[in-house]
Length: 59
Image 1 (cartoon, rainbow, N blue to C red):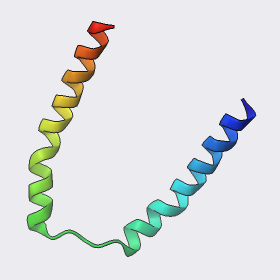
Image 2 (image 1 turned 90 degrees about the vertical axis):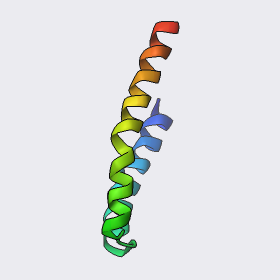
Image 3 (image 1 turned 135 degrees about the vertical axis):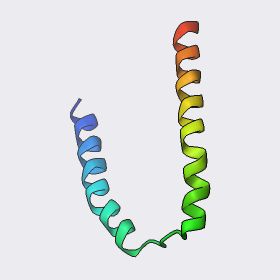
Image 4 (image 1 turned 120 degrees about the horizontal axis):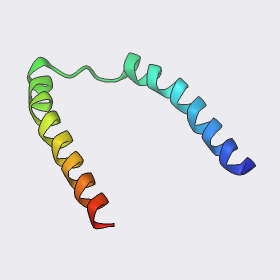
């Protein structure tokens, strides 16, 4: 149990450090790229929810 908590703590700290660094120094997508990504997000979220629902009914 202690190993699990240690791993979770390390992952949390890494995320707290890496996310701001990636936001600051990462490449900024153009408005065209953002619109392409935005168009795909909701259908993919809906598909993943439908697949999760299907999987939960099959178990």
